[in-house]
Length: 143
Image (tube, rainbow, N blue to C red):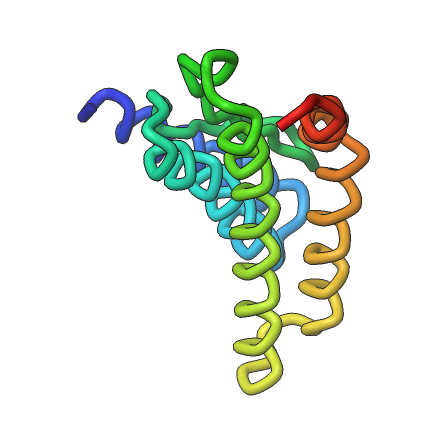
């Protein structure tokens, strides 16, 4: 567990460092927060559904980052549990982005408009991205 926490911290810091070097703005840190919330959404909903998840980690890349939360027994879960795990990430990400948006309305570090864009991208990219295609396949199965 300590190793997983260390990997999560190091990958989040590496992602922030790489992207802050390329784009020195506080916006980078808000993006990392939304990404971490997204991955922890998958993680916590997995725990609620009695799945066996690993702690999330981030693959640091310039101008983009990829979050990974591995659920070992995902294929063995009921379709409703699979859907809730897949939906948990975008839900937590959107809630975090909107919370940051509300905070930025009173403390304008950056334009709050950017957080609305992130919330919209969280919905669109996850629905049409890898999570979304899997979600659509699962929802077509009989429940």
